[in-house]
Length: 388
Image (cartoon, rainbow, N blue to C red; front, side, top):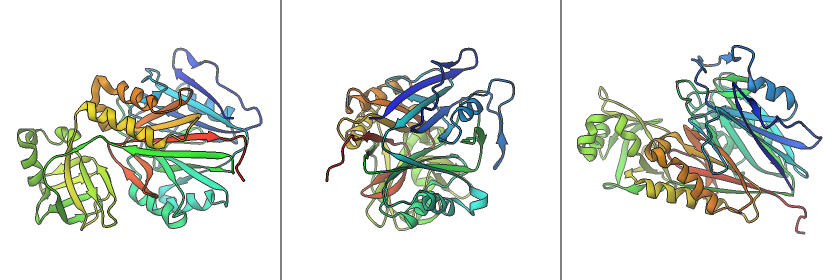
């Protein structure tokens, strides 16, 4: 049975309770934080915290040699709360499971797809049961990263999240050897017959308007729908709210159904009046079908519950929830309700920790997908016996 311990850190009190220490078992340490003084990090830059209080260096020093992964967030999730502490860490000790972990720098790998391939190569094992990933939310193309994993491990479930923004920092970062870095991706693989994982993703968004064919796009930039300028159509559907773009876009993402009939949600990150285009939170394949979405807080809360129901495996011991920062903006003061709704669908004794991200990864229909404005949940259980 896994042992799960959660701690928080702030500059005044330090780690509360005391930081756990290794005991000889394999351990995964996840740390999520939003620090108002995080500052601006240029791509590829490694930035130790100034001053004497550096929770990430201390954590990584104590757990040297173990799998330590972390990233910046737009807020943390812990149990049924959204803690005010700027840093949350969870230590998960495994009795019968082996962990593989690795960090990859995008520029050295040659892009996100190659980074996914490199990570997958390190994770590969006949008894690999799943992979969890975190990375820089600005530098990493999540769709390409997922494609890289699929190139090497096409049938392996991969979940995780790309870093969100802190309260005042525009850059996002992930943790590499105790240092906050931009332009990196990290992964941990779970190896063994005793580990069992579950996955769930759901949004809670409702359709608004007709389906339209993506007739011109490049990467994550959408130029035309049904042969018409994408921005003009988007503004037309939003009515008066179209005058408040891109701010109003947070409540009106788009569903994208690709040529394999898989549907994902894509955030509208920005608009470009000069090219009449929309920049979305993930790739938009030409020939796919797009449809505008909207939702009420009640439907988003329901979506979180559905994600947890899909991830539930029975007697799960630990769960990682990755929700989108845009969902938190829509939910506002009701953000804690989606955490409560997720917990209601899981085993009463489960430990739930997570963060608000730029985007998330989760298997959908057996394939790795990038999701925006979606609640994704990964559950874990370590069985004492393995069925023959």
